[in-house]
Length: 200
Image (tube, rainbow, N blue to C red; front, side, top):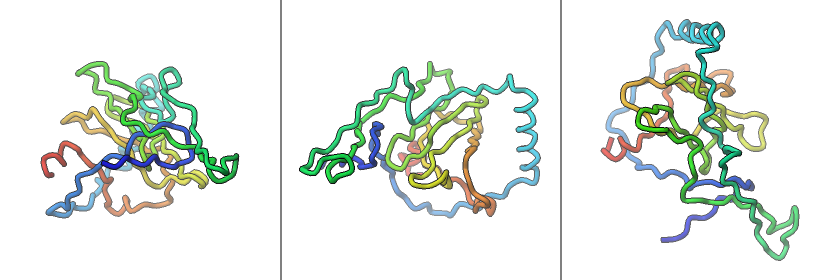
């Protein structure tokens, strides 16, 4: 098998290979989402509870793409050594270190720990940080697109340790859009490895 090429992203942060997906066209189209009439009131009430009961908010960082400074496995950047290898010249390019596995930022303490773990250290992953607000609610911060001024209109990350039954809530707090097709019924795109293995 041919070697996986190292992503030339110009950064020195270790990355893992981009996740592979089993692609299958669904037999039936998914219906558009119809928001309940009480959605706005529920959002306002949830925000009011946060403000009035700050002691109930966990505010625990469970993921940071830059890594935990106390256990991060960050290697110094390597540079190509072409004949013109000089700062700003051809051949002087910091290369991202591609690893088969990176230690997760957060590891569940046991089977009763229902904290989600996140990962975005792969090509095109753009989740910067995940903060646990409540047991099943997380505030997410996206990395802006490179060479833009805080352009965050999409997202790509992986989540693990989910459980059947609970309803999870992700608040992308720096999603910058004056309007969105989500308002017209579009649903977030999610991919389940378990469902894919069953042909769903």
